[in-house]
Image 1: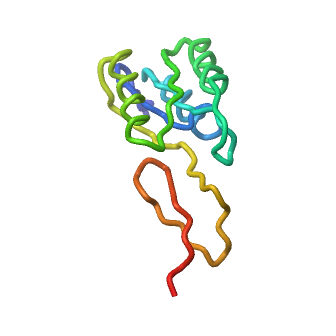
Image 2: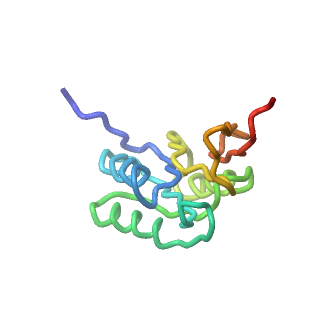
Length: 132
């Protein structure tokens, strides 16, 4: 069986600075995709920001012979999503694949009686108490 290839395809992977997102980005690049490595670089509770995580993933992809750029914009806003997409368009001329792996975070942790409600498809969420 032949390997699935992504030659000349452009992929955006959010949350690609570590964990599964990094694995997705590296594997897509290994299979020929040009990758936009998006990571805000914040902590797991959604605070802070930095470029080192995305930069490290890009460096690993490039060291293995792949093509990648870093994006540090947040997926939590339409403006951030537009900037991530524009980075792909500017660098590679298009977008073929999107893996929205960026973690959702809330200001407070939900209790077992809380419900999670997705507020938009950009990996943001709101925590709300169940209605009575």
